[in-house]
Length: 477
Ligand code: HEM
Image (cartoon, rainbow, N blue to C red; front, side):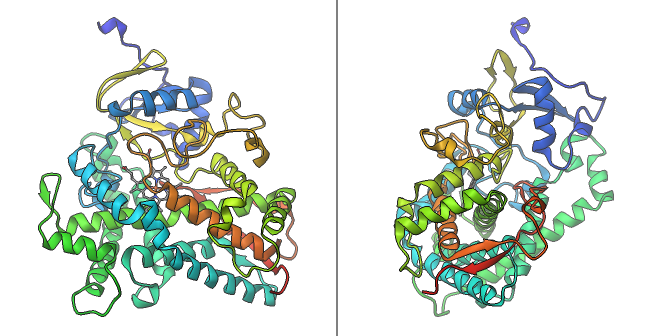
């Protein structure tokens, strides 16, 4: 039986560290480069941990569709473990009854299409505020930092939708909260030696300061959740029951999730999940879309013409229903997700049962990475993969909802993102309004070639340098 086991090709490594030295800060790029030599199923040894990296749509399909049940676990890594109160959130909890219960609860109460429709008035108000702030910058002819603007938008929407409070009600400014969130992302995605190097790893984490930095991040977020709980204390005059009210009520009613009663730690972990998963991903998507449009002026012109021709010139805002008519805008977003998937390696999975991909054995307890960033650049799937060409989707049925393995910004299978509708509508709605109401020019002295696509490391990959563009009001309505 042993002879039938075939290990996937693997780059040569060193004792103890294995292949760790071959993986840089931008892990998806290092793995992409290695996969060009070792193929779409690659075996690595990350210190003591065996890992398999899949880098083609076919191998992704085999794992996430044919063998989804065999690989839908999550590894217990130090960063996620600390930030999720020992894996009590949805994203990092192991596959099992607890995960099923809290995922179902969150989908029903926050992420279902009905719930997402019900928060549309919040999105309308927040996008209107964004338009007003753009108009102000346009009147002064000054550049705006779009990374920040999109983040402010998603922070405001998620906080009002999830926590039922707007940011003016908390002691944290959007900027401080964003710093907290960005740091938490770095900590979730950071390399922790204790996960990979036996015996001495935890000493290295202390010595490098990583452990202290992670503890600080956990404390910062914990204070934020406590502040949210205070704001939700009985007696405070606030409208209808929001997601935090609901979780606190379920805690009081001693609701069982998995085998436990729901506690404050469970609630904090779930809040961490929606906070981190909800804010960054949509903002990153909008920033990358505007980056590519600014780098490709003819595409910018075409998408703006579509919006303005389809919807006329008399609106002050585009509604969510209007976005249904914008087929080219949807292609622009798909093309953005092909080149810039917000989570380029999805979230690492842990193999539960042995299975095979392309004749190679994948063993239980291995880490499984699906490199969707590499899949989006695979020349066997995409013609001219490095070019930003939304037209490639004109006669194609490929959509990003987890059925087409060439394009997986939300992942696929049981662990796929449960917020596809919420994420997609946020991105479409925000971009449609920015492109309808304003033309965009480069700051004085800058040319198109100056716009970079450098990435910042982390579990999600944002644009490293600010995207600065000057809004120019399109028609005074
Ligand atoms: C454009 C927006 C978004 C993108 C691109 C995105 C992408 C992803 C990806 C790639 C995963 C991991 C899938 C896997 O491991 O296979 C994920 C998981 C998850 N996302 Fe999203 N996401 C977005 C928006 C949101 C929003 C708005 C929320 C909630 C408010 C959310 C909540 C979650 C949760 C709870 C999980 C964990 C699922 C599980 O492990 O069962 N996401 N998302």
